[in-house]
Length: 278
Image 1 (cartoon, rainbow, N blue to C red):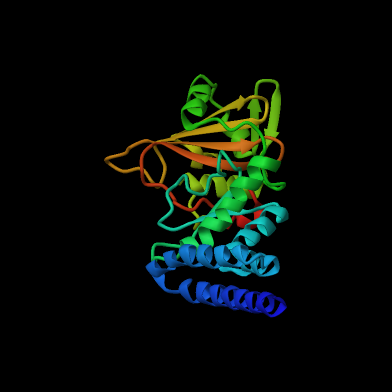
Image 2: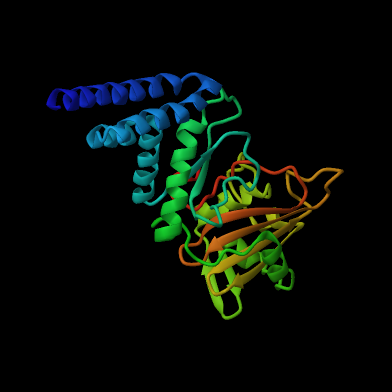
């Protein structure tokens, strides 16, 4: 009886090690990575049936899916996690995710078929933790209007004084918010109003550009740019309109929404976290 139990345990360890090693081998086999799921389920079923609890635990924790899930937990704990995906980013890709409040990161356009191995467990961890514990500590945690809501709110907003705005002052009602000079330069370069090759900037650069501002639920600053003098204008799109949503607490943008015109910079220079700006 004792020898039979020892044999079962030894066989269970073999199944656990076999499952872990093969799962890592399969993780680099492109579309064949889908074999990882039935492989792990089978090995786990066998170890659980044999009541090899330690083998089952190691099998659960040491496989690649669990390791990438744990990586997502660690990223969330650091306060600035990013949801992972593949593909060419659009203008709105780098917006803070409105549901999880995580940031976003793409691995590019070249895929081999096994990206889900590290992306899906990582993202599941972020979605779960954000749903249970709320937004990551370093991300935006205030009201987040949809594109349609933001446009409706700012459509009736007054136009800002150009000389005040070029000085970084945004007057909204009785409040005055300030944008740092370097942030203002990057913001207007993103709109195509300033050119990155310019050495100096003046009020003349805002000629042909109107800026409108509104506050949404006492926290979200909405800036709407309407420009006929943007470097992104064309014969097909003579006017460019965009909205930028700011956190009024730190005056950092968390979302960019194109309204009119398509020729826009995909990767905004000014982002919510200073280290992500470029």
